[in-house]
Length: 92
Image (cartoon, rainbow, N blue to C red; front, top):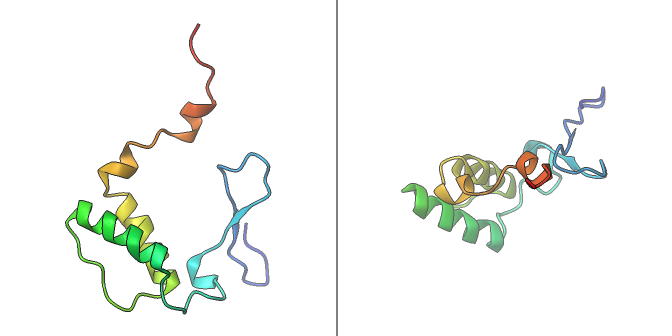
């Protein structure tokens, strides 16, 4: 959902309560700060699995975007069950 104020946050479709939103990293107020240790650690794991390098001096926003990109390439992320599959009733 986008408002006239330029807010590009959208409702998180995986949140059944509707209480959280997903905000574009480019709109984060802290997006220009250096990537966190947790982001860099996770990026290192994903990049290693994808056979890629992690660029130096990433911002929080750039690290978030790269995490999203590498998750699509990682076999680890592909093994995560689909949320829709988890919502189905188990067979009798």
